[in-house]
Image 1 (cartoon, protein in one colour):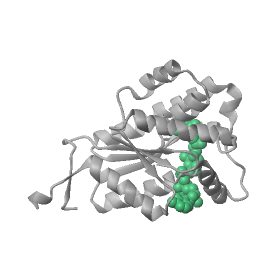
Image 2: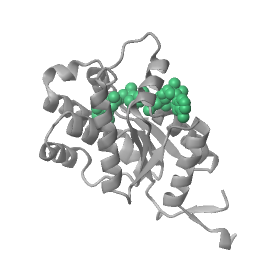
Image 3: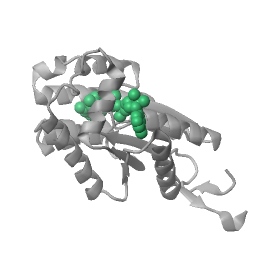
Image 4: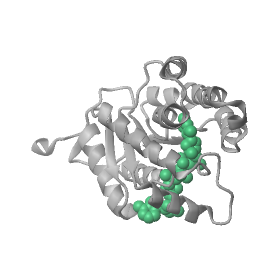
Length: 226
Ligand code: T5A
C-alpha cells in the first residue's frame, strides 16, 4: 500500500505473535491478518505453537493428547520447550533472516500463562528454558486477544462439536479465568511489545482492531511523501 512503509531496517522480517485463552479467535484473526498483509505485498510465513515444524508437530500431538500431563508440570513444560526449540531453529529464524514476516499462533507468552501462572512452574525454570530455546528472539508485536472466559469456551465448544476437549480445554473455569488474568498481566508488563485487543465483537470488527495495531506499531505513515 502506498500510504504505508515498513519501519524496519533492511534484511530482517517482522515477528508477530497471537496470544489469548481458548476460543479467543487467534486462528481466525491470524489468517485474516495474513490475507491483509499479503495484499500489501508482504512475504510471510504463518505458523503455530505447539507445532509448526515436523518435529514440533510430533510434540504437539503428545501434549494435546494429555500424555505430557501424566509426566508432571515441569516435564510437560519441557515438551513445549523442545517443540519450540525445533520450531525456532527450523522455521522462525530462517524465515526472519530471509526477510519474511512470521505470524505465529501462540509463542512463549502461552508458556508463561499456561505452565507458569496456571501450572505453577517456577519462573527461574521458565527463564532457563526460554534462554535455551529462543535466546534473544522476541516478537516485535504480540496481539493478545481478550474475551470473557465463558464466550471463549462457548466458541471453542461450538467449533469442536461432539469431539472431546483437548488437554487444556478440559480444565475447569477457575483455570481459564486465571489464564485471562495472566494474559492481562503480560500485556500490562510489556506494553511496548503487547497490545490487548477486545475480541468479543464480530471477526471483521476484531480484524480491523488487529490491523490498526499492526499499522500503528509496525508501519510508518508516509502520507506526506506520497
Ligand atoms: N499451550 C500452547 C500451552 O499450554 N503452552 C504453550 O507454550 C503453547 C504454545 C494449543 C494448546 O496448547 C496450549 C494452549 C492451548 O490449549 P490449539 O489446538 O492450538 O491448542 O488451540 P488454541 O491455540 O487454544 O486455539 P483455540 O482452538 O482455542 O481457538 P482460537 O484459535 O483462539 O479460535 P478460533 O479462531 O479457532 O475460533 C474458535 C471458534 O470461534 C469462531 C470461529 O469460527 C471458531 O469456530 N470465532 C468467532 N465467533 C464469533 N465472533 C468472533 N469474533 C469469532 N472469532 C472466531
